[in-house]
Image (cartoon, rainbow, N blue to C red; front, side, top):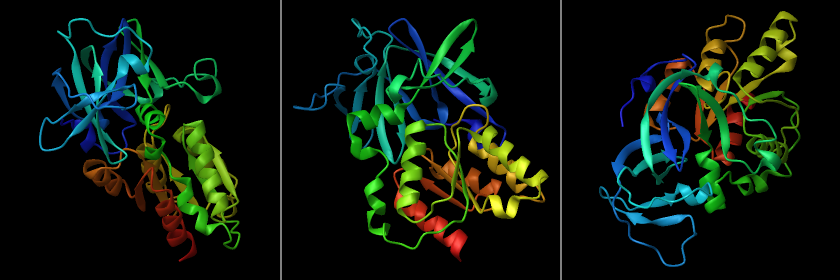
Length: 300
């Protein structure tokens, strides 16, 4: 699935595909989508997770199908006339999601996406990453990475990859993180602590990270406040690409190494990150590689 937005750099915009499950409207970042296919009967897999509807083979690759209605505890389709498969690719995985209707694509700014509060994502169990309003209706942007990780935890962040680094010498180099997922934020910080990096400043999105960088710049405390920036791409208010652009086009900040750590790293997004000046780009399961990249940029 081609999208012009993938070729643009640091606009703080994205395209959202709106779709329906039951009577509710949901959204997914177009950058995660490989293609959209009409519903076809799948092949069931014995003893699979209850959310796995089956598998199909639209090309030369076998793809698992997630029944999104079951995941969201919504009514399932009865006639499948408007049903579609949204085939996604993130975290180096191809997965299809069975939805009941595709509505259309909207181009929006990350500034217009509101992060759900704790009443929506109580205890970190929710699967909503953002909420946006289209045509007087609310569209919930779903956390597809979390949905997949709930089905198979092995697809999530592999914290065990840094266990062999536990006895390393402590390093007080300050690292700034921009990550909107509370769970991932904690896992990244825990992993960095295990690896010896103990001076971590955490923010929930690019806007908060930029606010801190601006403050340190104005106070002339940059050198002692931050040595490296780690940023996700998808974040409400300001995404990681726009944050990277702001850093790399600022005379006083451009020297700072920026690592993009995201589930969206693919060929198109890697080119975009390179154009913005990112020093390293890694897919989220690769926490061990993240530590290696930090070592190279800070210690070399």
